[in-house]
Length: 471
Ligand code: NBP
Image 1 (cartoon, rainbow, N blue to C red):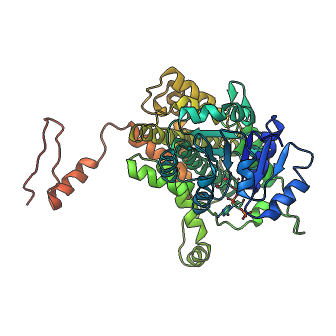
Image 2: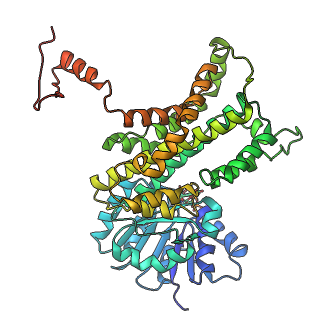
Image 3: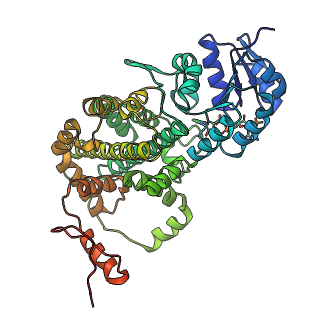
């Protein structure tokens, strides 16, 4: 039997769809799944008639592949990846390459790279974004590892990735765990985007009083603007058109329990930011919002006891407020991306990843959940100045915020007056105001630290380290 060009392990949602995508682009492949029934079902259904062969043992799987072997692992992150790697190790030959396409923690990837490279094997951590549909029709891919490993998979990843005006949504990210690091921060940014959209929805519904069909119209209109045109705004507009199938006739979204889950990448983004000292308040607010939403029973009990302001129905200019909410959403989004990019820039230094931030914005333009026209502006900002300290300083974004900040501040003030939480809008504005202010009140914090703990302080008028006798 002719040897297959590529191997794929793990036939859940992502693995199945990636297998079909790879085959559609002309690469033969062998697939394997721990539970044989899944492989059988896949072969009998979606893989029928395709250039895909099944393997029912890892020995047969490995033996079926041309050398050096290229094996994509799409299993649950964590222990399952280690389990698969341990089983593969004795079966592989030097030069073979394992690619972990799951949402693995980047430190796990760093460990696996070291472990496998010591054995002469290659290991890549590749972020894959776009969910089921992206995996099938073109995801955004973030492969990290050695240059040689990338070159071994380049023809495949370039052809299966989403294609945009300036090329496929894949690039060599950098060494070690950089691919998974970038994917993690991508997901953190996704958390921020989703929370900001949720806050805009809350204001449009609770203050402006829009119903589902009006909400659909507003989000559809916003999706036509160059600033907000994006996959997440598009699906949000769609969501408001979906009526309940179970006979209530109501918009489905209003019947969905308001308790959001999270799988880990949002939390990991917060953890790494704290670890390397980068402020990402919008993304932290988004993670916190999900955590608070999840204590539904406790919130319900609290709502019987704690009261907020009693607000009159909104009687001002509805369209003007809708436009202001749009501006607040866009300014907040800029701040959220500024934080995500600042985190990537710092991580690039700390971990020697040599990340190209403009190129990252480019590969997120298609395929992934945060795909948006706006990413082109970010790419242009980094193309114009690759050493940009913060996106907020780019002329395009500086001007945008200058033009819209009155509206942004007004929206947050209205929310506060009416007791409507907008944690990510507020965190974004606080980020902007903190970043742009020459003097912050942390002189007092330093004085307190020196007072109670002799932590010392620096002065504004002379160099050196000082300690005062405060009492
Ligand atoms: P899951 O994350 O649900 O994992 C299921 C797969 O892992 C099955 O093939 C399962 O085999 C296999 N598996 C497990 Br669980 N334990 C194993 C073990 N000890 N040894 C071998 N195989 C094992 O699949 P998914 O949703 O397709 O996601 C795959 C990866 O891609 C994950 O890391 C996920 O976070 C990431 N990702 C998912 C999405 C998405 O939209 N779903 C998007 C982007 C990235 P079995 O059939 O024998 O149980």
